[in-house]
Length: 415
Image 1 (cartoon, one colour):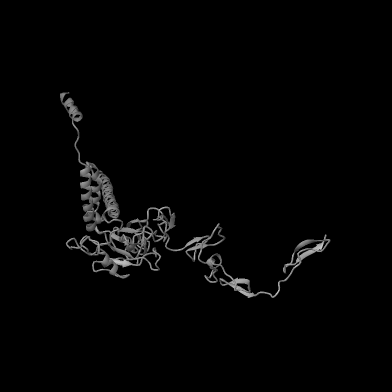
Image 2 (image 1 turned 90 degrees about the vertical axis):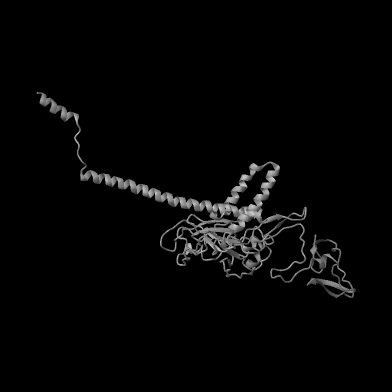
């Protein structure tokens, strides 16, 4: 009896140890594989998103620095591009080309450092020629040095006024102009395009942007097509048309991919569209930022006090027509109390009447002649009749006046 109890206690008091079967191991491996695959996909997505976020942050930062340069560092102009194929060891790396060098470039030419001048998207200043666009690299060194100079002067002002805490915004702008912010998330330099007229305070006008920005379908993203001031491009994951930090072309622009090549073919039209990675003409993976005029300045106050406003449009203005042929073209009737003009002409510009001829000294015939009409701003005169024609001034008795005939005689009829 004791032996049997001991055996019973042994069976109930100890756990039986056995190994895993092959099926159990397979199930564990499969489950682990699913977990690892999910983690790997999540890490890959995180890394891709981190690159995209870095690109967005840097392109925003460098565009902010250019805005600050315009407002503070350069006194009302945008910086000119720097050379794209210069490395950090080059003394001209990140320095905008001079105004003289930019002016010396003909349309279609590039400098040795790959700053190109191309035909703009429109003739904004109305001189009969399209306004050129300069394309190169962001001039980060020029921007950094000028902003540091500006920040230093502001620091002294704030320090003197006891407002040093307000200086932090300026510090942030200086950071935005650092070399690292000139690179996208893939470590490649942004391309920078700017309307040449807007890089000189003497020719700057808010209306003179000459860069076109369109959707992948060819529709303008601007209120006035072809009117963007400046533009920044990241050439995306494939890097076609982008330059490395040491000034090397990362990958050649592919002319067979329609949408994507539009941002690296060195012309004044750029595309800002949805990402499309298919192996066809719709392929597009670039990131853009651009500036255009902030508000309409088509009407401006005259510089003379109390002189009213004036229209800044360099072309023609149409009322009732979208194809004006003159500075002011009105299709329809125009009503006014008084009209002030040097001449009034027909639609061809000929057969003009000079108001001063009539309203000034007047027009007269010589003594003994009678005016018979006016033609070509002078009197038509004829000899006076030898005796005046005496017309009837009264109707016969019993008749009443019905009217006056063409020769001046009375038209009478019975009452």
